[in-house]
Length: 137
Length: 98
Image (cartoon, rainbow over all chains, first blue to last red; front, side, top):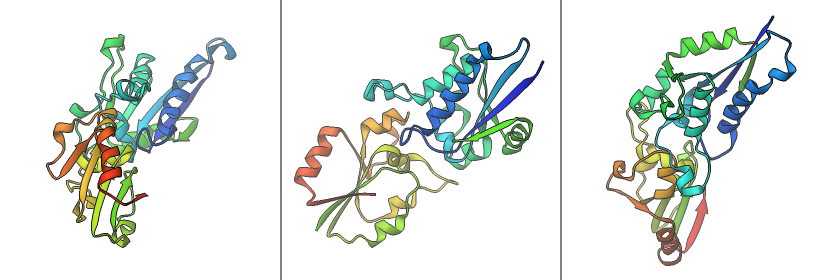
């Protein structure tokens, strides 16, 4: 029985490129590989938003209303629904003058129990040390 | 020259803007450029906003990113796509995209 831990680090703002959304879709897709795993094996995915990447987490995004695009906010909520661990760098949020009130913290409307965690960068570093594979977006 | 410059990135080199000379300069914030309007890095407004220019921001791109038009300061005009088209045709002779 083995657990493979994946870490996705998002450091770019949303929408200009597909990059941050790819991190989320890859992390979400990582949870659908069960058929290829041996009995008892697991794949976990942590997603951390750092630097300009924390701008992805601003709530009330209206991408669907305006551009008919699934918003990055919705992608984050889908990740929460799948119980993925989502970390947001506390120092970077503060640098932009943002607080927990400004970002996506839960996805209760979808029935998700997991919540976004605002943590110091040191905790994100710890996560990076613990994972088997680290992917930067 | 009446020049309108589109800024679609959050991180940009203000240097390039400094080199552009125009009798009338318009800076139109679109895409991720809209973050310049509200994000205060380390408590400071974007250095871009110190430029002597007429500032515009596209409302659709603000709302897409979860930023309310009501949070935009008075010196930046919030415009729609159709108003942007009017600006391009009526107010500026040349356009640049940074």
